[in-house]
Image 1 (spheres, rainbow, N blue to C red):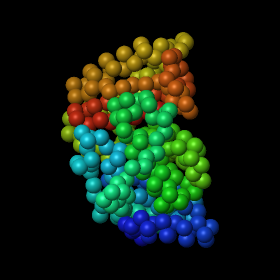
Image 2: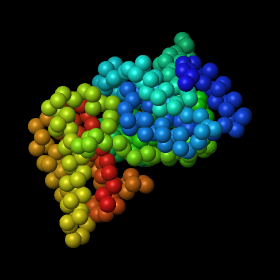
Image 3: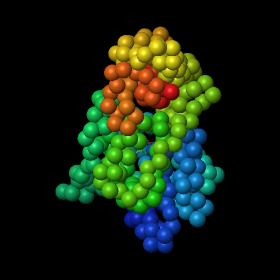
Length: 289
Ligand code: PAF
C-alpha cells in the first residue's frame, strides 16, 4: 500500500491511472476507521475488481466543522488506520495535510466553495448550517485529486450521501456514487468514530437511536393507515428522552429521493434522527418497511 501526502503526487498518480484505463474506487473518510469504513472499502473493491485500484483518503476536514464543534478533539489514530487499510487491501492511502488542501498564500486565501442549495437545508443543515458546504467543497476537491470512477459513502450519513450524489450529478463529475449500508453493533448502535466519546453509561443509552427507529417501525406496522408525522415525532421525542443523558435534536420523516418532509408516515417513508447523548451528537436513519 502506498501512502500519498501531497496533492500534486495524488493528482499525478490519478491521471496516470486514467490514461492507462485503470478503474479507481474511492472511499473518502476522516479516519479513526471502523468496520463501517472497511465495508465501504470492500464495496469499492467489488466495483473496480482486482485490476482496479482502491484509494482511501483520511482528512479531518476543517471546513465542515463549526468553530464550536469537535475539530481539535476529533479522534485520530493514523498508525492504526494505516494498518487497517493495508489489511483491507487498500492500494493507496491519501493523507493530505490541511495546508495541502487549503493553502493560504498571503493575498490568495482559499475562497471558493461548492454549495448544494436544496437538500442541505433541513435536518443536519438546521443544526449545522455550514457543515454541508464544507463537505461538498472537500469532496469535490478530493474527486478532482483522485479522479475516481466510483466513490462509496455510508448510508449512516444519509443526507450527506444524497447531497454528494446531487452535487456529482449537477456538476457533471464523471463517476458513480455508491451508498453502502450502515454497519451496526450487535445491539443496533450504528458504528461511528464519535462513539468513542461515550462513557460506558452513555454507550448503553446510545442504543436509544436504534430503539426509536424500531419503535417508529412498530407504530407504522400496527397503524391501519398512515400516521401523522407530527404526532409520531412527539412520541419519539418522549421515547428518546426517557434516557436521562439523551436529548433529541431532531427527528424527521421524509422522501428518500427528494428529502422532502413527509406529513404522513407509512411503509417506505424514511426516518432520520439526531440525538445528543451527553455531549456527543449521534445520528441514524432507516427506511420504514
Ligand atoms: O463522512 C465523512 O467522513 C466526511 O464527511 C467526508 C465525506 C469524508 C468529507 O470530509
